[in-house]
Length: 96
Image (cartoon, rainbow, N blue to C red; front, side, top):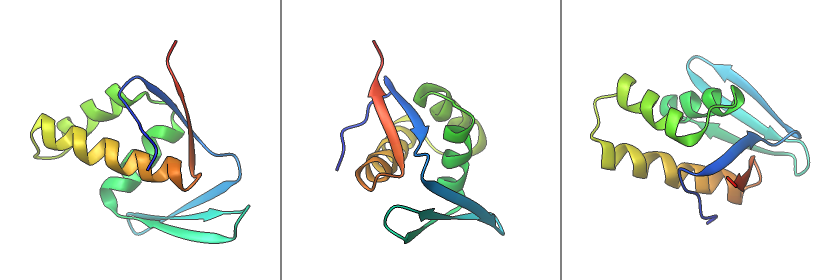
């Protein structure tokens, strides 16, 4: 799995289409023809990435909107981000 930190800069991969269906998101990787599903929290994270929000801002939204402690929120953010990067659905660079 790709290594992600709160210093990473994120953007949705240009060849990935997304569609929100009843609060969950379906992603289509046009390059591979593979579909992926995101639950409600994953959908919220995807929306924030699409709005060019950096990981610290995404973490703040998760803490504000969900009943979760900071360590759990950090883990629940960074692990899925790593999976999205590993699957090529988002791109990342380290902040300079």
